[in-house]
Image 1 (spheres, rainbow, N blue to C red):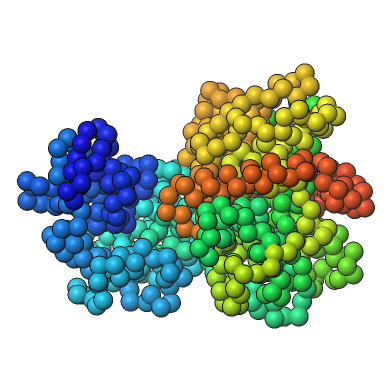
Image 2 (image 1 turned 90 degrees about the horizontal axis):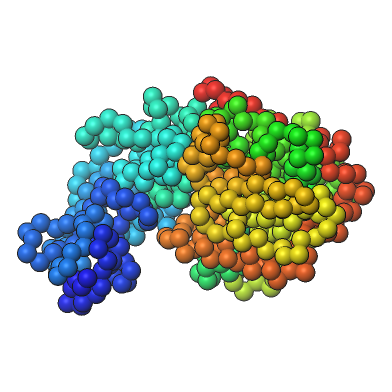
Length: 572
């Protein structure tokens, strides 16, 4: 059908909203509460437009298109209404932009500047609420909340965790955890998807930059590792194209900050595959507990511990890659370099907020030493690069340090949903048959779809696979599994939709294109590598030969594997 927008005729599709049609045609319509692909709530109302023949403005996010509509997106009436709406929203927001972690990415502040809101017009409404810093991963500041409801919807509708919701009424309305409790005693799994959609900085990651800076000044041997998904997203913070691989620039930047060594967590992804694929092969051979769930994602692990503790035996006992590498750094690397493990500090750069929780788990220790001391998000790394005054785009690229800088393409695709599964299948086939797959690319598990299933024949066995991203999809699968309505032998689960490329610690993406480009970049890196299977990583072979002996061996179990616990409210 045809509609007219600002005097220009455009095409629209029956059943879609005005906002969808307008955005597709490139019209600039502001939004704060809108979530792509989800039913509109109309909470913020800043997307209002004027329709000829109607006296009242309408919210374009919820207004259906109809043939012959004549729409004005920036008439004087619309502009004045939007400005007033922004002023009203600013009335329930503090004047502390100077100190806000999201200052440069705050959508409300950007709209205020765009529509000329330069002073407070309406009295400040305070919620008289304290900042919640109880959790290791996420900080919640109710004073900055404008009740857009995006965090509630993501937590409830996408993740199906239901950690936060609206409470009270009228001017006392607020968003809080059940019984107004703190995040650390709620059902929060630290995935950070609420952070990725919050437009005002009311939800942000727990900032550990100062602790890392102090570590760098401490005189100790401070090393850093970076996750597979970080190199294809960090560039966005410096205006580089979506999906641009900045691995070499990032390594150089980390060296300039003063880290003694820079390692690639993708090496540890290869190590994880050796252990996890061996564990899967062992379970299949000995009729062990199936399906086996991956355990790379700490948000998913905590979700199982909290909501499905009866399935904890199904979780692989493997630690996540960065925890494995932390354990190896403070044992094998420390001995090789002649450094007391107590004098080594390990920093991880992760696309994830849940890793901040994971590094503090009691199970992630070797004696009294934590495997990893600090975990920074991709966003925190970008801030550190700016703090240190590094001209990121003009750095000379360099490579990660050996022995933990050598990786396969299989280790790199860990950052995308399905990547762990694909990498594991490549190696599991070799471990069970002694042969390499004829075709390493395994298309059925690729893509951003939230649930994917496939079968692969390894030897004379058919292995049923499932790949899941977003905890809401995981809940549906787990419920079906409980009822006997779902079957699988090996299941990969990532808490965040699309996997780590869309992690809670990644640069704030305005649409799904950024997520898709990041994943695409990882697969392109894999396809261009000579080494594409974890079990052929020479540095990894040396690690086993000189130190670990074999996958699932005594030393491997002690350093690289872990255990889980059912979580009650008091110890979540």
